[in-house]
Length: 277
Ligand code: AMP
Image (cartoon, rainbow, N blue to C red; front, side, top):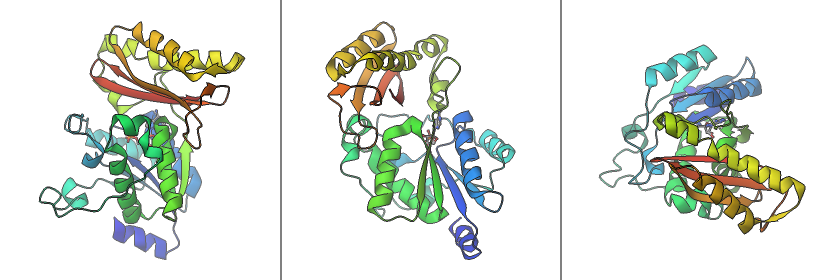
């Protein structure tokens, strides 16, 4: 992959890159379209499919994360993706188990809250793998989804802090008709859980409605969201936060334009969502 990318670079061919963990859905494919628009017919679009072990905690779903590779490859072919990069763990973390892999990239501020607090080693895994993938794929543009808002903010900060020569684009969250954000993890849900999972979107709508009329104190709105989540028998709130969408600084008062993010367990499946209110 890196040899190909360096050859393209020498020929002046621009690469747009979409990193994923596979099990592709329409949300991923919308990032591919955005990537294609960015570099045009003369450029190349690279999608990586890699379930990165270093961004999963020990009790998380790494081993059972869905890996429908041939279906993913067909979707990429249909979408006109030029190259799908599917490295093995051995290629990415040679000798990790034996202790001969020991270099990580760590963002120290934006990764302390929300997902970073709930999943302590998660963002270290993300920033490390994204750096490695950028070095391999040599993209001029990378497209991330707003679905993982904190992740996009952290990668953006890393790109700026480390002077990585990559332009960061963030594309909107694609949703199912009932508002549930598309996610590879939605396929873990049974029918009843799938119905209850719309409570994340309803929470966002509730907060949006409350914030639109007048500013609300964050704890008041958090309590209202917690009550709504509690109406669903299989849903358990992990966190809900209100913050500035750029800096991720907590917002004591929630108003129009404030950003909201939440994580909810539905059964054993942990779902996240976010939106600007
Ligand atoms: P993942 O495969 O879950 O690691 O996601 C790969 C990329 O797709 C990330 O940049 C995600 O933010 C993005 N993504 C995931 N779900 C959606 C969605 N529903 N709409 C838009 N982008 C998404």
